[in-house]
Image (cartoon, rainbow, N blue to C red):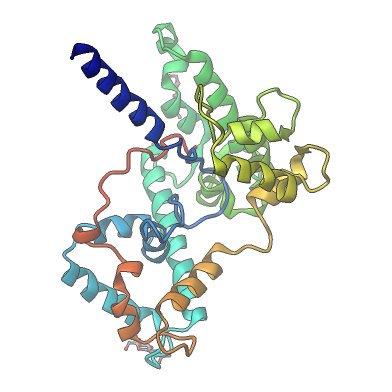
Length: 320
Ligand SMILES: *[C@@H]1O[C@H](CO)[C@@H](O)[C@H](O)[C@H]1NC(C)=O
Ligand SMILES: *[C@@H]1O[C@H](CO)[C@@H](O)[C@H](O)[C@H]1NC(C)=O
């Protein structure tokens, strides 16, 4: 009897292990220009669309509203998007809106960071102001305190300094608001592309040869577990690497291939999203949306309490 019970328990354990879902893809946020940190997978949720359409902050506000309030506010937004007042929202109007929302998010974020770092309120942030506050525990007397992981902080400091100097065009070590925006949101600025590529390589290139091979590329998104066969999506990613990442087929990605990967030139997120939202809501297939078509599909545009996702614990905190 007892043996049977143990066998049963073992059996349950074995099937539990066997049915354990294979590991999810690591949620890596590259410094590419995207409208949301969420994966765009409408079969799971519309978080990507909500953040693209409303901006990251405003999307959170909508998640607190009742469905009725959300729809009412969406109606008002639709009136704003329809800039020529012809009662139709077209793809160019929607694109202009998404760009406006994204710009507003960046600008509000910079406002917040300026309040934090511009101590003397002169409208600019010096490297000293920034580094004093971010790395106070490495500087001055506090050096004597025992900070765990000091070397990691030193590395972050060096990396920040390099990025700051790149953003600081005139080299006076004082970032104007515009330069500070380039420091915080390098993906918005062409002259920061090089440093983004350099930082990305540093993150992924474990053997330090200055390029990213297939194993490093995979290790960046997947940590194998003992006894687990490589999941299907990892095989797909390997194929992706050889077909689309390693363009000159030498087995690794160099700077130009990395650049092509994180900043594909023929890929405009805002444009694709505008077309996507129209396509998914355009019932009569006239390539433009009425307010009714948008409100009928309101769940895709905005969230509400009913679609509240709660705090997403997997979000990265080390974006900078
Ligand atoms: C559309 O309507 C708004 C609000 O009534 C108005 O401010 C705006 O100037 C109008 N735009 C055009 C192009 O007529
Ligand atoms: C930075 O910290 C040093 C040492 O604590 C201090 O002397 C200096 O005034 C600080 N500078 C700024 C701009 O806060």
